[in-house]
Image (cartoon, rainbow, N blue to C red):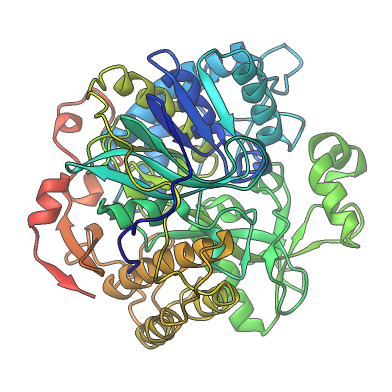
Length: 575
């Protein structure tokens, strides 16, 4: 645990109404919505378009087709979530989603169109309908980011600071009062400073860089979750880290951001095969290659175990050159850059860390357990994803719940107290040496990756405890990132070790079955006096009733979610 802020040489200070941290779809939409109700400071660690949104290939899911419905989208999402979705949050997502996408189009996002001029829709894993809107073939995220950044330039009341790492949340009287941050640029606001605000929105993206091989960009170091934990906020579902089934295999020992092969490639007809050409997913699930991601990832890993092969193959040769060039130009170029032409040979693929279904626990309007602190997008745990995210629901979640946070901020009237807040140039003890970053990643990939066991998780916990003692005296940005990664990794391992079952994207070799008697519920946790404590709360109703409940039915009105207060009152164990 990092020591409390110590007195230091004052740097610059600023005041605003809201600070939004992150510039993906969640951060940009939240910032523009918040600007309707006051001044906003948008902080991003790198450039505005450097986050995960621009890398999204497949698209954004919404019931836009006449033959589709929010009820069907809800059913598919609940099924993928393996009994742990918050049905009220899912209902908000799928019912508000179509109009939110239409507003995105009105903002200037250009989606691919069908011959009749309507938005072209495709299928991905777990979806029983074609409901994935895409842009530029496979450049959906880049187009959404472009449109939102163009809209941001026209939005009054938003100040942007790029190349700035938020170090910590400023707390006063049990609520958020701002942030301290390190700006890595030039100008008046360079170096370490403090910003006072009545509300802070965490939209920092994922935690994929906790693992050696991931689809996440280098900036995805779990900063938002670490910030929230240090401030005492509640997190949930951290054991459910989704591994994307089809990431290009670059050879043994490959690390860093790996090339993603979108699920939409399978949605358009590509097949998963082993070295002999057998479609091994046929017969394992009714949707074969289009089963939910956890099912496909496990199917690939099982086949690799059975055959001893280092990867499986994604065969899309039958799609033809013209189709690849028009529908998946970005993926085609990436494959060819790595010496593979999917028009003439299958793509070697393996699962890699992709998406965190858990995060900072929120209500339906992004409010966390700390007054004034909000979370959105991959940083948040809204309960939408449960134990496994349905494909292309992530962009939609960021969009819908960012809009909802905008509504909530309209009611944020807590007066901003006088004073200078925390020292703007803090000295810290307990920051980890940047060299531990690679070691944390190796520990997590080896012992807390796709396959987990009690023995491996115990070893991960032991190794992380050792790495936690390797501190440095230089409070550089790299030390803060390493510390954030360690904080998040420790929490993920604790949750994975505690949940003794296999459910969704959490796969325990020693507990291979889903256990709805003991484990149909949510693990939440928080840092208390430097120790991460977990509490478990059962969910109601039973899982078999969830997917059958349509919005508006009597059963659907029953409470789905265990409240933060109930979770805190549940018996918790120190881990």
